[in-house]
Image 1 (tube, rainbow, N blue to C red):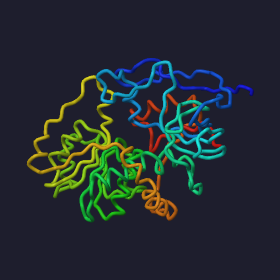
Image 2: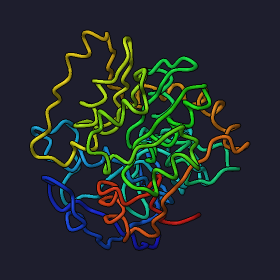
Image 3: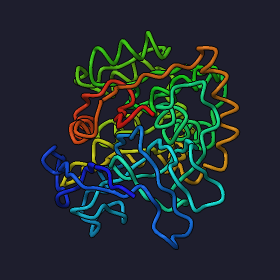
Image 4: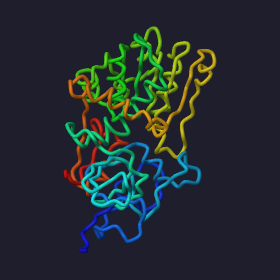
Length: 344
């Protein structure tokens, strides 16, 4: 069996502070497109679309002292969510030609344990890249965080940070479908326009132009916030706590403002959790994948009818991977950052 080229993105060493493109390297290697004899429950895949996600930054840190005990191995390929095509399988659930999404390596071809595949792709009438986003981990994150953790009621006031990102753009739309009043924050005029004109947010805040975020929130939420979908942490969380209503809920999805800091920012208004009886709950999407079929039943009709839209920022080619991943921490992406390796 002939060997083929297999480019990879490797992590040079553990990262401290903001990641740089130079923290990663593109290396050439080869792979034999045949599963080694005797291998059990493994799948050989061709990677098509890779997902750039904020949580990946936590895997770049030295696991000692990191908020995420798992970590990438220096001088090895980084890994993340992706859409792949099965070339060969020794697992009963997968066969040649199947399209799947789950965890794969940042390389052209991967030999992965079948357990890393989350789901087989059954619906092909939507873009395959959507399975890195609205129909993949970010979509499930928005759905489970808002509905399962946030417990929304019609007419409630919802605030979403990082609102134009892969998760935030969906939380806002799901909240509007549920009959809520929704305000989002983002970091540029272009993104604020997107929130209001594309995603249907009632109002939007450019946090970079607000000298006083507490005042901005009071302007948009004179009666207070029922649900804060937390994506950023830091100063935003501190200002939101001053504006939460009694019995408010804060699903904690991420804290992107803190991932690159060597000294994390403190939060000074936590006492509001007590007096306002606020429920602030962290969650991880893997705890909710059992709801995936229910989620597809909810979201696919909305996509097909145009009631839910999704914006992607596409980078072409594995070589663009390091720049695309680093860019999400600088706010360079507009919408879900996707890396295309091959389209079929």
